[in-house]
Image (cartoon, rainbow, N blue to C red):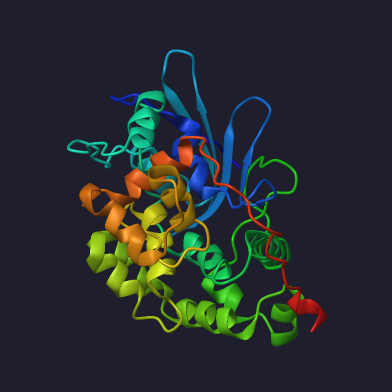
Length: 303
């Protein structure tokens, strides 16, 4: 299979690792890998078919993307957007010392856009109301068993995300085997039934795009925000309802935990770039205090 390439020099400071980090669902994500040479590999679906991409930044600052598969041209066209070229951080002002310090240390942070809802929607739904450990295990199993092999010379172990058609063909006992409970299964299947229409959310963007996603039963505020952050680089999509973010932001900025209402209140001065503030907090290196045992993951396969 032939390789197609594109070179692009970003006209702004670029932290490649920070921009692409939200696309990787844990170190074992079979759709995203970073190899020892510093290259980022990604297996994805596109409107034109599957694609494997490899992104590397050269010493002169130029970014090179190589792509294989039917979706190669579509992926290459989207390289600038993927790396944050459509993101506009102008006007963002730090209102807290932790955010200000993170801005100085990470001038290359941009909010990238995959321009594709489906691939980021499924893992987002899997993360509803369960631990990251549980969700990532389910994502690995669904990709490895139903996603297919990516085109081109993808690293060993990489798999494509399952398509809407492949998801709709999964039988009940296979969902159970992958550790996916009935509520999350129904949400994924409901999204798969209208997947082509959901891609319009990338064109709408912002609150309108999130509202379109929320028309799907089982897709709430949190899931829509998680998709928006990745699919169109939504700088204001806050993951309200997250298990960790209110506490992390609260401890980092105020020295105490917050609930969702408190999170929105402390982030209010950052509107319409509240998610950018959250990303700076995440990159700040701040670690909140730990109290008591961690939440124990459930294994739905044993039920």
